[in-house]
Image 1 (cartoon, rainbow, N blue to C red):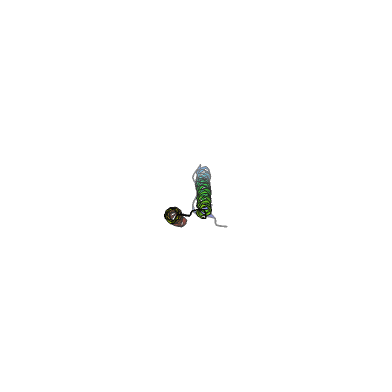
Image 2 (cartoon, rainbow, N blue to C red):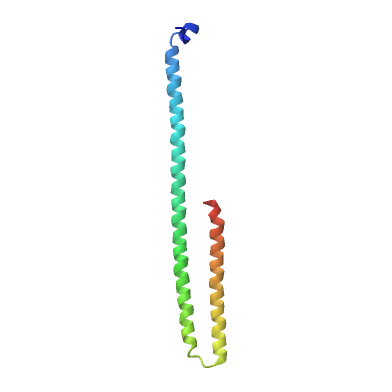
Length: 120
């Protein structure tokens, strides 16, 4: 049987060098894999943190919007007692401004969220 040893005689210590190269190569591949897993873990942690921050922001916006909506609704209830047309007109103008500002905030929030979606 003509093997590698018959064609290329090994020098003394060659087996040790080959084993060392094999060990070093395995260690290098292992280190690359560990580094890739560490990067993926860090990415997941950042993603979870971003999702948590986004969720908290949305919850705060929702709470603020509900409070503003309740304020607007309460003002409509007080409109029924107004007898002076100018006071009613002023109240309606104020309501319209509140509603428009709330809509503008929602549109701004939606634009912000839309810009973030491709980043996910």
